[in-house]
Image (cartoon, rainbow, N blue to C red; front, side, top):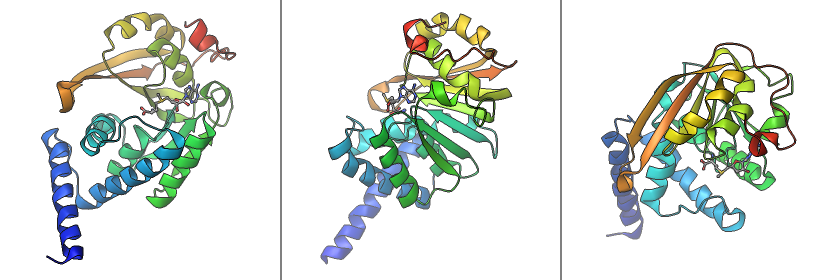
Length: 246
Ligand code: SAM
């Protein structure tokens, strides 16, 4: 077979296989979205050599542990809502969510400059509309009037324990907005975060557990609704969110 045709055939077979991973978990995905995921994976691997973005590089693992894991909470975001993500790193969960839900607008907050360079490149190359990248710390943006209590949703994965994370995240929410936290095994963290959630004006409205295909890894999505404004002294800053969690 001609080399070009062979490459085309292998790309097609690959895409079909990866599509099955999504479909098995009930995520409907079309070929245009799959092509975006594939392009995203290529950019991720290219930048990873210089920027150390992720330790997960094997193709199926990238699809399951990064892409699919990010998408399994997509039904929790309201139509046309604006979402801020804290500690975006390689773009998880926001970039996969944006590929699946083009109606959502995103602001990605990331404290490491080189990861922001990577994220901006992804936004440009995948031609993602209404996605901003902010280089800095959540504690600082959370006090800034332009961002405080301005979002319908805030999300984060693998950034800090839930009590710390609530102080980073809940200040960004409008009242009635919700924080969608992606966690591994979260039972203990949920217990420890009860005080932080109440003090910051939140209330847990959903805890959803599921497993990913690979190794049957356990995952938890926690939805925290904002029921009243966050007192102005939070986030406290100076590292107190991590050193002395509420
Ligand atoms: N969310 C991505 C994921 O699930 O793969 C990245 C997780 S990585 C372990 C945590 C990221 O959060 C890092 O890129 C780190 O620089 C960023 N980060 C940690 N604390 C932060 C803060 N207070 N404000 C903004 N970014 C923060």
